[in-house]
Image (tube, rainbow, N blue to C red; front, side, top):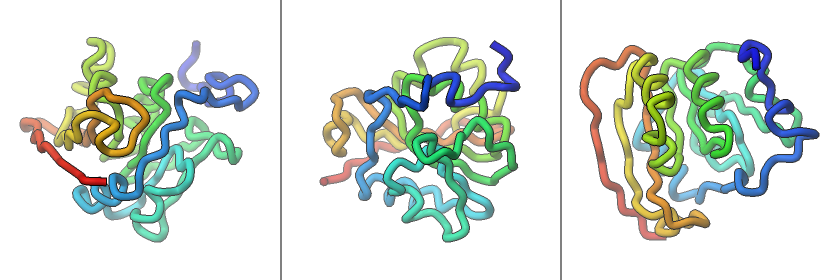
Length: 172
C-alpha cells in the first residue's frame, strides 16, 4: 500500500472503527500527561474521542476524529506537539504519520505496542527516540478496560540522549 495516500477510511472500511480501538482516557490520566509534558505551540489531538485531552491542551489546539469526518491521515499541517490515545490496531500507521508532521509526540498506549517489533523500534530510533516514558502500570489501575501495562511515551524528534523512565501511580 502506498503510504503517501493512506487514509483512515482505508484502514477502517466505511468508517466503522473497531470497538477494541475505542478506549477512552480517564480525565485524571489526560490531565496528568498534559501537565507533566506541558506542551506549547501548535498542538494536535489526532483522535479526540470524547475530547478529554483537548480539555487540558492549549486553547487553540487542533483535533481529528474519524467518526466526526476529520481524518488524521489527511492532516498534513506541521505541529509542535501531538498528544493522545491512538487506535491500537493501527498504532504503527499513527506513529509514522505523527512523526511526519510533529516534533514532539506523546501517546498513551500499552507498553508492548512500543516494543513489539524491530519495525516499530527502528521507526522510533530513526525519528529520534523515546525521551520519556510515564509508566502507569496495569491499565485497569487507571480506569482502562484491560490489565496490560500502559504508559505515556514521549517521542522527541532528533533526540539523542537517554530515556527517562518514570513510574506514576494515580489513584482513581
